[in-house]
Length: 638
Image (cartoon, rainbow, N blue to C red; front, side, top):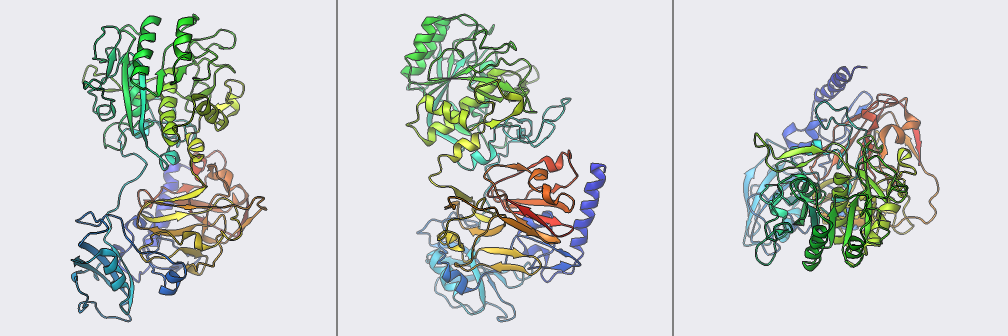
């Protein structure tokens, strides 16, 4: 079916949802629900369709008490940024209109009604506090007869998917099959370095210093200026060629690589780097003709070492073995990320240096295309350690005619810069890692790709998320401030398998909720079991984590799908294409919808278009809850 027609049909279905008579006005719901579902409430039905939204129903006090949930608040409130000792705050209170007609006569010291919001949502009122702790005021308001809940008047904060407008061009960071360059066919979903989930763990490389040993860096570029390393005299690096502290780029290659490593992320302009916040040291050792003497390269290494660079990005090389360069690298404590070369050659047969030096502090990097194949010009071989996205990479550039400061470039240089940025994020998580440790982590946790088997030592393409997940002390669910739709990927260990795992989450008075088809919402008690392949709504007043403990030998599990809306979660800790994960019900599932807790809104639905359809090639993420709509009953195992 033509994609446009199909979207029109799904839009028609959603519009049918909109026509249902609602118990509450639209303006009262969680705003993100309006993107796809326009019927508020619990279990609204029309025929066989039960429409899910982000829950607003409050738990009973007994549920909250049993789970020992705290309602303490550290989030921001509208108008003011609150701290624990704050004496002014804004609090939203919702009461049961069938029990209480209004809360206008509330007599609580330091708490005053500011605005009745009942026209927007029945029973909703905004209170302000003066001279009273916000947490105390929430508790006092929550204890009033007929009050369903009280919570801060939150500011919704944005996420770890950057808001940089050209991010769609950066397929190496996030590839969902989009057209990433004009006139170039789209790539394959998932053929990226797996950055999005990794950024939920960290977007900053802290005090890690990455030296870009290259043609220099345009340190005035608005994407790079905030992340430039600054030396004791205010310099951003060193020009080996002129022996001056001005490493301005006059060729463009170094600026391009620097942007891949650490263009300032989530700043609303241009692109983002692998590390949104980092320290880029510019070391210009390569001239405006793109060539350099080994002696200049060695002087650049010396400068980087003297100024405590942790990682040196080396997007250069050649076929001549240099013992002095070997000695300079072997004598350095830094991790060297080195390009495998762009001759389409096998480095096992014809080495390319410095990538081919057999040193423990070198990572040699090949380049992949947007369809997870080796980029045609990339060198390869079992002596090349890793493969990373490197074809048609969009990044920062020195100013060109017309004022454009961005460009696409291809090659192992770009793949090298990407791995350098990834390495900075990893080293920040554990400063005791040796260069060899980092190399091993990337090799062992790469995504195994058939087209790359035997082409690099890793037999696949780098996966930053898999590496970053190793630094979580325990497997855990990551919560963002606000509503979270989550799932667990494996059966939990006895004693750690009930809703009590959420007991320490600062919940603002909300409970953990499960949607039961066709009965609607169920607030969970602390003793209720948490099962896999099920989505749970969890509210948190701040970014938080929930540790998980699994059974040592989990038995197979089954999820029974009913006609209509079901919640779903992957029985896996790896992302899987929707059509693969839901293959056993391929004939009946219609679409699946995730919820982005960072953005506090629903993702674009994934449609079931049959095998080979690009839309159901999109990946489902572990620990993420999903709405799954089915036209019939079925079963999924995991």
